[in-house]
Length: 442
Image (cartoon, rainbow, N blue to C red; front, side):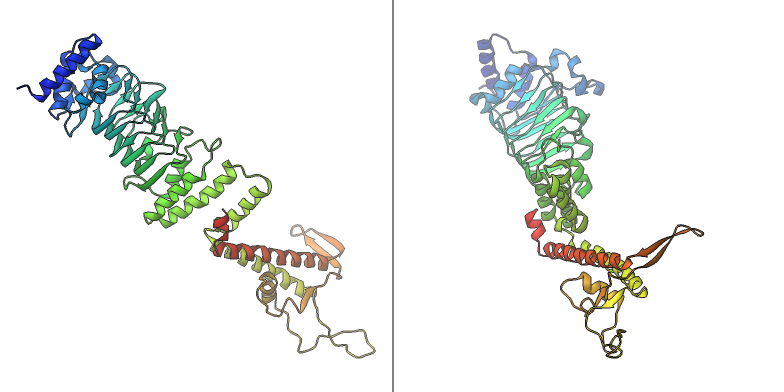
């Protein structure tokens, strides 16, 4: 009785005869290997001859006809001869476009150190595993096209994998890990992961494509592998490899932050969400007031993600106000705002009642800045806008200028109004930040 390998070869010979060519020993080696659950190994014993980048120089003995490989992946009867190990090929030269669109192959498809003269197509393909380790795809345009493919296990592009052109997994579903590791000359590759669904993502920085050659819009993934960097700056660098000027997508930031938070990297997730808002200003469509408001929120409370930052600005303004109001009081620019007693009924000279609240510059700065408290300073004292005096402004150790009849009381009153205004603004921002309103609106 014929073995499985012999039966598969006989089936392939019938196919070849129908197509007008004969099977060579190279094809028979492939068919025998897959039928026996082994790797079809075409590598040379001389390791210098196994560099896939130089695969165009390999002879015919290492080049199984692409028609047989496509037939093996698409013919239902041929597929029935495959073992659970699937199709595994090493050191082969694959000439022509490997068109595997719409295949349904519930076994692994593995290539190691292979040379592909043209692109690989896997549109809407269903495969158990997909490995291209140390492979070289010479196509300058569509290197590996797997839109809407469904891979149950891992996708592996590693250990010297090199593609000149597009590597597309847009809208693909990858059940386990998408591995981009030790890719060679990654700057020659354009990677599309738009709207893909991936369980786990492993993409090391030395394998990333260059700026404007990465597409991540709509990508959804559940975790980032431990071998990938999870610090916020590294992941932001990954996101910003996209062409954000032409296609800014907040979803890529939100997806990354969600995964980082689920992994326990809360601080890194916060950094990503802050960067999303800042990048909206840089790459998004914010203009005019929206741009300015976004800048203010970022500068003061990091868009509501670090509301405690507002305390720095509050203390700064209170400190500035303390100094200015202390100086104003020393120049007799602070006047009581309530009715005060006369020295005697026939005199216009006024004195302050001994029981009148005493002026305190620090408490006055706090009282006028924070709207929700009352230290009985702001309501009892006001800068007197009617006072003028000669103001000397030193230029250096020996020179100064004199401002005659300077209305410094009016200037102090103007600062007083500004101090109150900034108090309302910063307090409102703080409340909005602490209650999460800013984040929800963002």
